[in-house]
Amino acid sequence: MTSKTIANGILRALAIIIGIVLLGYFLYAIQSVIVYIIIASVLSLIARPLIITLRRKLKFPNTLAVVFTMILMLGFLTGLIVMFIPLVAEQGKSLSLLEVNELQNNIQEIFNQITSYFASKGIDVLSELKNVDFLSQFKEIPNLLNSVLGAVGSLSVGLFSVLFISFFFMKDSQILKKGVLAIIPNGTETRFSKSLETINNLLSRYFIGLLLQITILFILYTLILLIFGITNAVVIAFLCALLNLIPYVGPMIGAVLMFILSMTSNIGLNFQEEILPTTIYVMIGYLIAQLIDNFASQPLIFSKTTKSHPLEIFLVIIIGGLLFGVLGMITAVPCYTALKVILKEFLSDNKIVKSLTKDL
Image 1 (spheres, rainbow, N blue to C red):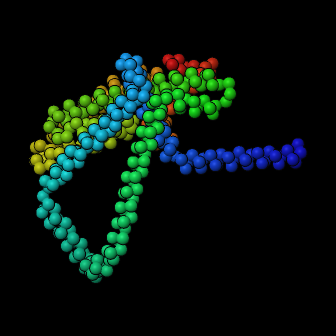
Image 2: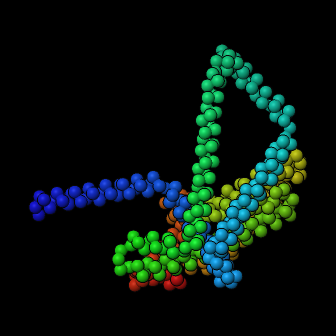
Image 3: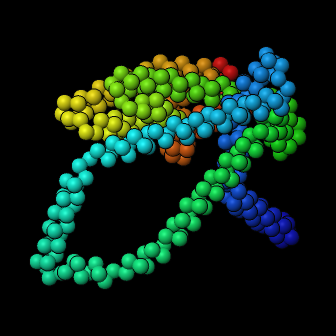
């Protein structure tokens, strides 16, 4: 081996490393665009059955079917926003029922105690407060307003981008497929194409299964809250059901949220005779709904939509959570499903792969 060969090998290795670093930096720089594409892909997969139904059963032209579907999605999003307004207003009204004068007296008493304590140590709290430059704090207000406006602007750009990308993904379902096939090695296009079609079908069924799971929980939660007279039952039920998109962690957050909102919706009533018993009954109902979801709805829906055993799904979600946190838990099942399809296509003779993919 000559020195020239060694030098060329080193240069080639450096070039590969630099290329990987640049690619990583590029992906990091456009991470928001990648997120938009992922969200748009999920929306297009969810909308796919509806678009196909409109085209085949009702004879809608493709573009009209896509536009109609997107109008339904926008209407659903608008409905969600409108639903939360009464909840916020009601909670504000509930908080306004608190004894403000008593709260003010308690705060004043605490302040007097703090002042007396520091006075015994030779510190005049009032004088120290006078020395604080409050004017400089107001200079931060424009920065705060700029941050809020920036967040609103980013949200608007993100929403428009997702809708724009979703439209073309729905209109031409082959766009994403063509993009993937363009970067894979020659000679594997047919097998990858077959895998992508299977992945599309399975993921469409999976996301529709998620919607079905959320719908079942939403109905159960709504019935429980209405039975015990909780105000804004529909909004609270929907929010708690939506949190179930986060496996295992979401239901716990939903339990805390339902506990707090059940109590605050009854502020002004007797705590021991009204608020506490009602909240306990609501939480018992919540637990029963979760048991129904965990042992009936979820295993049945997920095993049918992803062609995976419930134990597989449980382990995959746990591993995804350990590796990538909440995001890993949410994306674990779709990624695992796609990986199984690809492995079956390219490693079908492997004993482990054959065992995992026997139902696909």
